[in-house]
Image (tube, rainbow, N blue to C red; front, side, top):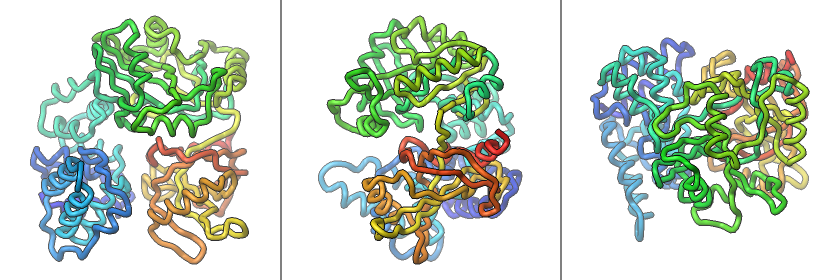
Length: 507
């Protein structure tokens, strides 16, 4: 299939607000693909090629961009082969070879195809074709139940591979897709509440656990082989040898564990999040050690635990890793839960997560069974633009325009971001320098005072609440917003939603 067909389909998807129309357009495209093209095409459509990140940044893309081709000739297979070459080129002289490969690819692409390829390689394709829409399209194209496709994609962590099975395989083959030790699973996510008592009203009896300010990890052990993945399913085993060594001491053969890792001080108190992420992102071992804490177990020695209640999973976790469990207590009493929260805060942690004891592990989902509670309301938002500063910040990009995710398209196109406020508070000189450089690299347009950027940067914002406002399309504005940190470990699709923020009006 020509790449042009993917581009035309993404244009059609982006041009309509109708979810049904999006699904139909994508399903029609999927049906026209050859079996060998399905996984590749799905990866391109969601800007997650099967090769993963191939090391192309904005500067490399700009330098490789030349005059576009007049007519479309590139095929899906051509792009896939070029990405294979980019991924496999390393060693002396590799930079020049990679640049040549990228220039050749882009020189054979039309202008619209160049923009599409850039969006794929930079992970910034904005078409409205979110994974949820494409998952529905896969089900439609294959004539399979949506829930079966969704579950297979969540458990495999691979929508492209799931699409191939759903469209070309049997229903039995699709239903057979399950947990595999060594293959990462999309992590379960938590909603947000303003108080522990409010969270307990939703969950009923719950495990109230410390909310650590660390990096999410999923650990797989098969025999003596251990693999560690991030919340975005990237493998980081080689960066965490201390975690590998610890997991090898557990009395298990095969296991999948969910948890957090963070740096601790000599007194056992958590170190700042930036220290954890600096160590977490290092390709070589550093002096700072990361300690793992586990809060869930998904598989143990041939037994899948996803569909077991949390109470059962916690019992298994207590048996195999009692010294490495995140502290917490099972209760339905708000006073007891509040006491756990006070203990967590006194120990230097963020707050608590309240988890319904009867809940199953809903991979990839953010529901009401897990609810995080922090004393200061914090939300992960997306930077939409940034204004130039004044005074001592002259020449620096300072005032952030903040957007919340609108997955349902209640305030525009599904999957877009709704502006909810601005802030320049909480920015250190280091962050000002960083964002001034970074945002100009990803800018899409500018005026004299403002640089608009691709909506790909997640920032954690602390607020005192929200208020009704006609200034922004979502009808709310943030109160006393300030920057806590940038979240390199989160994708824009994991940002908090406009619906979550609007719920604060009622609470």
